Image (tube, rainbow, N blue to C red; front, side):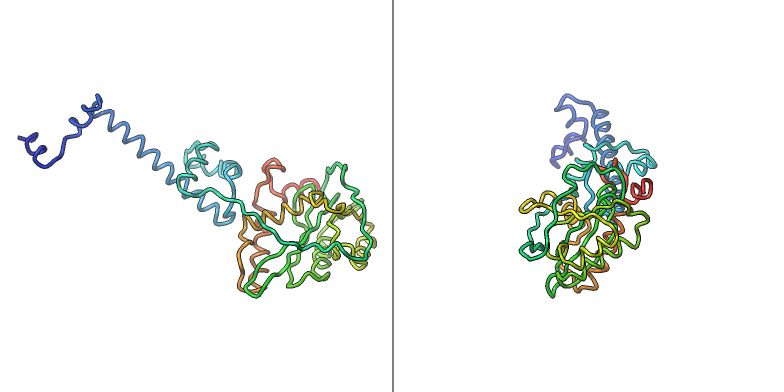
Length: 284
């Protein structure tokens, strides 16, 4: 009677279906429990990653595996890098890197260009080498420009300024902020490209008054300031400074927040998964 009703309605019992594959009903239920458990794990992982990415929206898989290890342990999850990668890929949560192209360096000027004195230097402590660079940020009214000074050892951004022009004042303000917060700048070297801002008499005189060595990239060798350019890329790739802001003030607020997160929360592979602030404070 039941089989006849199933046939008339076009349905088959679970027992009948599993028998077609040489399986028993118990095998199906075991499989279903595994799938349900996997989906529940995925749901927890996605929720934890989304919460983390409220602060670091574009943090990659390798760093997430480290930064979220304690949170995964607290909810009894053992999530390796490959598992996390597969879950994020399934839910379209992998981060993509963008390429940027904009020229902010004008090296065709009358000012003296200094040699690269850090090329073979081993950097072992904070405030040994600061690297400087300028990058652009878009607003609806045009570009504004972010001047950054980064400590090479700790990767900490020690000074910055954002303004609506490429004039010297922004770089000077960033330098003064870095000098103000530094406790010990003995034997410090300042490294930059050969842009007119860094070669100008005003800028170099500040460095000389503070007994800071001056180092610059060689002509057409921008890779010699790769760390500074890498920091620029991180701020844009991972902290959404690549978007177009409503105004200069909006860009300033976003930049301040991004730099605080970069210094205080973002883990660096090159720092053995520590933050710039941790390394700077421990060894300064």
